[in-house]
Amino acid sequence: MGLFSSRNALIGMALMVVGTLAMLPSLLPGATQVMSYALVFGAAALTFGTWLVGTSEGGRPV
Image (tube, rainbow, N blue to C red; front, side, top):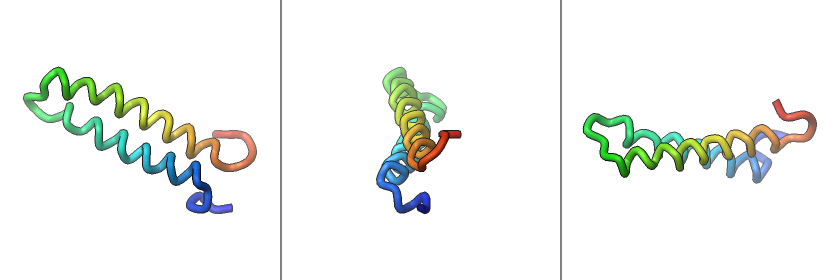
């Protein structure tokens, strides 16, 4: 079973992209405190997406 045939893997990959993009505004010069809060959302989405991709296949997650 390939990586792109699993629904959880596709959702996980989408969350990884969203999480990465959510972190980018806080890296810009002059970022406000509100933009820094996006780091929490981005980190959570990236972590959960990575977990979904890692556990989408059978066997022991790596």
